[in-house]
Length: 137
Length: 126
Image (tube, rainbow over the protein chains, first blue to last red):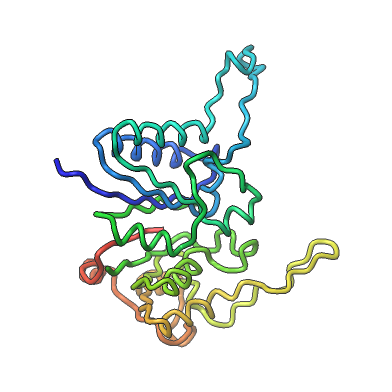
């Protein structure tokens, strides 16, 4: 199968609904098949790679932070970036800069860059297809 | 390349943003050279209604000075080369008459939407 370039536009913030995890599953599947992936994180999705996310203990489970090993979306994004590099394909993650400023989440993990809607258009134009995964009420 | 933005989720965060984020990104991408169309469906067809007034929001002494004016933002799209379509059945279900809509929009029957899709390379359903 020929390598494709796919663009995803994400809107949901972390820890709100399953769409974010589903989006990362799709990105993971694309990378596993060696496809190049672009992500334009819009609105709340710019929080997904926020570097200051912290794991916490879970008293209900009776586990400390290490035992709980709480999932952090920034770690998932970092893992996907590493997986793309290991596979020899590309994961270009662009955070909408204005959305970052609105939310004060201007510390992103390594490998995430700041951009504009113009970047989204450029990525989509250079892609085989684009999937928008928007926020729903 | 041409892309069609389908807007369905309406009035989501519009008071905080002072606009609709997908209408906004359509304007912003157009400025970056994008060739776009917009289709309003579901509750978002209400974006076409003129005379909306969201002003007056205040919390304590903090007053909002620039309330969203989404109908005006929609009305400005055709002037940038962005065709705006509105699903006719969704207008009818909400009792919205054409005289209540801002100028320059094109009602489209649900059955004609597949033909509209054929005019675009990518369909983005927000």
